[in-house]
Image 1: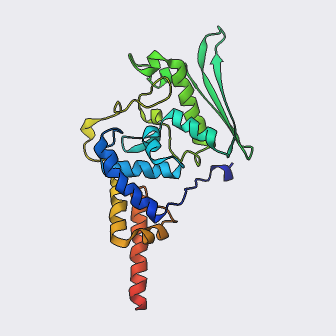
Image 2 (image 1 turned 60 degrees about the horizontal axis):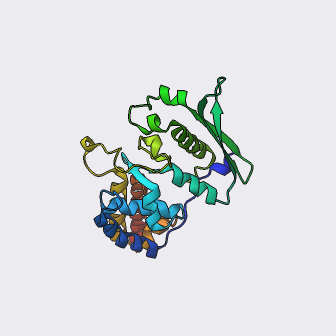
Image 3 (image 1 turned 90 degrees about the vertical axis):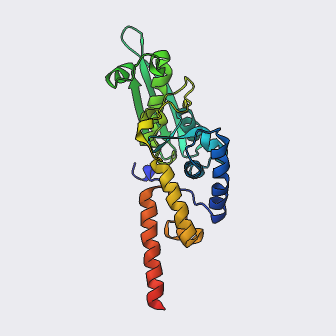
Length: 249
């Protein structure tokens, strides 16, 4: 189980990083993808790059909700189906003793044999206070239970494949019956300021401007840092390297 759940990240080249930063302002200016800033657009494309998604597809499948990047449930399922690490995905409906719909289960079996089953029921939704009037849980509860079960199963069985992200509905995003995120319905204007994902992307860009993309890639395992913690760790390493060079001189 431990081996199956190791999170890996695809290496990014200097050229790809420069291309993402060139595209980000255009994506933000287009107003087509509901991103708050060029930095947020760059962060979304970086996460998509880790998942081997086309850059523009990243905006359809990855959404920043209260400073957290999340996958649309349909996107998460598509990524799982496309992965050679997954042997089987089985989704089933649950019924109570009166043959009334009760919920969904999702079983994910990896190629190495590790298998996990998650379930989410209408009773789970009631206990969590999800069945609010006019919400997706009130309109199409079957679909919502299905997508929540998929997300919970992926959290345990395939965090490496979905980049360690949860599905957006687990962060409170509203969904369509098809498992797509309804843009903007999670927005909380009172929070103010840029989200953490955008701040991390901006900080990473500053680091690249100060030290160069090749140096940042070198100290961060051939990837651009995508969290504030990774940016800080990379900066400390770069400072140490600079001090060592000065001592040698």
